[in-house]
Image 1 (cartoon, rainbow, N blue to C red):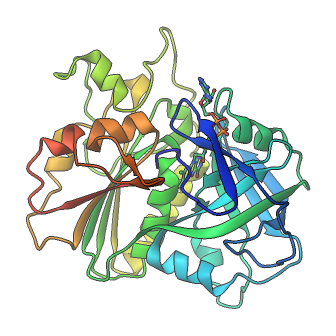
Image 2 (image 1 turned 90 degrees about the vertical axis):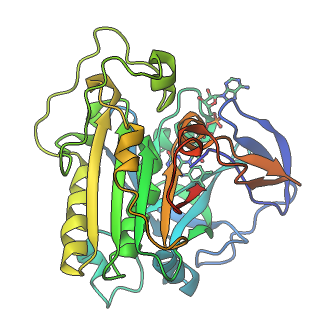
Length: 341
Ligand SMILES: Cc1cc2nc3c(=O)[nH]c(=O)nc-3n(C[C@H](O)[C@H](O)[C@H](O)COP(=O)(O)OP(=O)(O)OC[C@H]3O[C@@H](n4cnc5c(N)ncnc54)[C@H](O)[C@@H]3O)c2cc1C
């Protein structure tokens, strides 16, 4: 997802950050009266667990402080596609969007559970106000959130999705995997790019797509722009023992979806191992079929989205898709549509 804020309402735009985010000030004190998550007021949750998954990313688990059940809007959001919540930084009065990870399949299948914790994969952005604030918070702290906000709706006639995910862009990919797991006969291909192996320890690609691209035909600067910065010289992958938390969640979803006759295939690409998503990784998955039922989704840092599909634009204070550009803009997509998250 590009790191932008799109909620209008009782907020005033203060300015844009370097990665395209806008900071907002609240004009009125936020209300915390609602005990259930809702899009209008901030609701207090308790940070019950914070588990590091790499040197910069952690999974945060938030629990409704009043024990209120998930509202219908959250249940609907899980069924329909990609959604986010917003977290407030109370001292600075700014807020940022984050994408809940799906409940693990064992929890999701427990029909008696009316309340699910909200789990978030949050990257500590260097110099980032809200992400650093969150990473500094001790467990049992109160975190105020609001939502859900639907970012993209899975079409009813969806058959196949190719998901290009950069870094924490894997969170919406997991949401799509979860939703497609309830649609037998569908197929999801996730191509997940990370700068470092530590984000996806133990992740093995289905098939053999992770190309060794030592010299990209695009030139090295463009190649690195495909995800982010170049690996620093001498940087070594971390030990590959065991499996990273997100890799385990992807594998659990793969099993779960297979049991529901829905296919999930994952390819891992790691900058520091010089494996990069290439246009042919996308091209070979573009089965020519009816338009609209097949979609390419892209989520990750702005540079990743720009490189693959061109910049998103602002129209009348709202973020819009903008024209299709980048690598995908030059390819024959055979009727597949593209959506930038
Ligand atoms: C729909 C949506 C879903 C998202 N989901 C997730 C998710 O699941 N997980 C996740 O980790 N993130 C997610 N994000 C991104 C998240 O919302 C934040 O943008 C991110 O955490 C950074 O916020 P921050 O306040 O920490 O950084 P900011 O303070 O906004 O700064 C961001 C970066 O810009 C730099 N910067 C800021 N201002 C300047 C300046 N004036 N000059 C130079 N550099 C500057 C900072 O040093 C930092 O590196 C999502 C974004 C959206 C829109």
